[in-house]
Length: 366
Image (tube, rainbow, N blue to C red; front, side, top):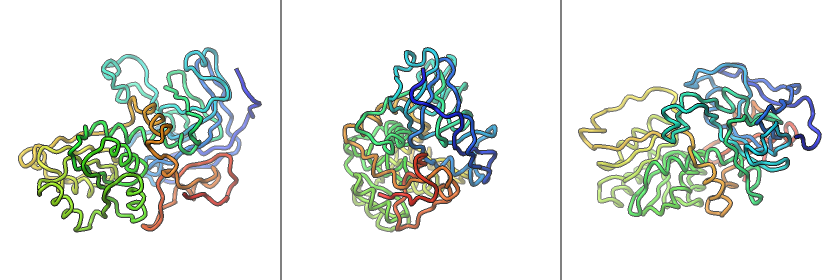
């Protein structure tokens, strides 16, 4: 089933290898949906730290090239393969997001509800073509969610990092009397600030070097915000906890030094959730984990069962997705977008590609 007229060629960005091997193409074939598949017109597609790692060449994964990147996206359904409407519960013209991980079979992890850890997985924007193009396919096994009418395309594009943030907050098991630190103020860190605030901890602290992001975090729910080298950070934690240390430390910066900061400031039997993507191994004293503090060190990966939650919380106005999308670029300007690094006084959280704007059009900042 096909909606409005669909062209045969489209604009898009392909990654041909690590380390600056991306290229813009204006003659990519528009894919046709097979049975069970959904074709969407991409409304917005985000740039993730993982995408930047591919661009700079220090990504920690083995990937097969080429492919169209972009695992944060939202799109309007324009065509349905045989049976796709019934399978996914979607119709032509509906706005949607799909989860980035596409899983198969019935292995050990899927049997236990850990579908985000399955051994048989494709990833939209890595092993399958993603959203950095005018059109993309949601595969037969994709998990598709409808976007509420009240949410903008920018907000819908923010669902993937927010869903990750919510998963991390859920892993932390925050209690009412906890002093919680979120380290890092990128899209996931800012999402963690807002999601953790809904858990109503006693105090919520954001740690990030950029002043503009610290100020934004205070507007989004943090009670306090400090640079990592600010001596007032340790003083505040000591005052709040009687010198014990914070109860929960959510590491979302991807910086080794930030993990060490968490080890320094967490209390005995406290919880550290590690959600960053790190570019090099860390040298740490393992005695802190057991002998000295008996810590709970938890990993965080992807967003199982939290996309719908993210959409619902934003639709109800409990999380502000609009403030987290700060810049838009045309597909043609991908180099400018990927190289965009803010000063400490500039607010840059989520950068997205908007396939509808013209090259060199001035990006918007909120």
